Every structure is written in structure tokens, then in C-alpha cells.
Image (cartoon, rainbow, N blue to C red; front, side, top):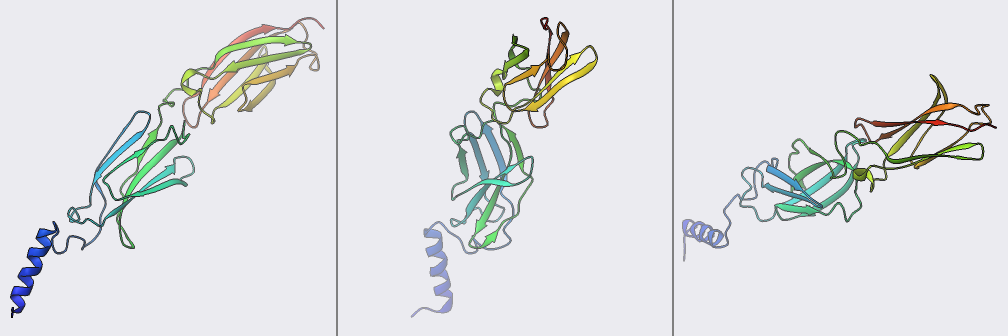
Length: 221
């Protein structure tokens, strides 16, 4: 009843009616376009489909979160939308530094990856603030040094502290770890009635560390 040309015309009309066009999901699958990220207590991401795939309704997108230190992928998710919200605070990803990439996917074909965006959450800055409430007290023959992390790093689990105790210019004791206290037995070192310089340095990842110092004199033994 209809010729081949009429069948082709009906096919095009039907595709147009469905909001599609021939070849909408064909061709090289490139990278997503116009990635944009913003952040408060969550991370908001938006992007556009790859060039030539704007009208393809079957595209999926994989969001990859990569640890900036060891480059391992620690979280992935998939969506059919061109926007994504990552509630990193609720997921307890405080103080993480991570890279984000959005990958277009169609069936078993992956699109191109463009340069990742590096993010640090609200608890990180270029300069690590000094520790707070540095307290030094004598307990028996021990000097107990205690402190609290700075306000911006209080929720972090990745803080590292370095404690150094000097008698003049001589380093007599040192420690590095993640707890927030250090005890030094000065009698065992025969350092009674001695003035010490105590340094507590806060460190986080590759950021610039910050040091707080105090002078303390031990009692007689």
C-alpha cells in the first residue's frame, strides 16, 4: 500500500512524535560537557550530555569519587539525570580530599573522561590552624601534655600530631600519632628541675602544618 519512501517518512514522524531523532544514541561517545560543582553541607554537581548525544534518553552517568592521596576509587554511583547531590557529611566523609569525575555510559560503552575536579570539604583549608587549649601538667614524675584540635578540624579523623620536647636545643623526647595527649617521664631522663620547650604540631595531609609552643619547668625529684 505504501512505498519504501512512505515507510521511511512514517518512521521519522513517529520518532519526532516521541521526542527522538534518528541517530540520537549513535556516534562516538565523548566526555560530558560543562561540569559544574558547588558545595555547602552537600556537594552539588551538574553537567550536559556529550556532544551529539543531547537527545539520547538512554544515557547513564557514573559519578566517581577518587581519593586524592592514593588515587583509589572509594565511591561510585549511577544516575540517568544530569545532576547529582552527594551528602558527604551524612556519609561521614569529613576531611576527605577527593577527585570527582562524571562518565557518560551507553549500554556497555563508556564515554571519555575529562580532567577530574579536586575537592576538599568545609573542614580543610590551605593552612592548618594550631591546636587549641594546650595544657601541661605534672603528674608524679611525668609531664602530661594535652590539647584539642582546632575548630575547623574537630570532626576530622585524619589529624596527625607531632610532639617534640627540648631541653635547651637538645631533643629529649618526641612522639607522632593521632591521639590528643602525650606523657613524658622526665625523672627517668634525670631532668628534674628543668625548663622544657614543648612543641605540638598539627598536620593534615599535605597542607601546611602549624605549631604551638609552650615553656614548662619540672619540679625537683
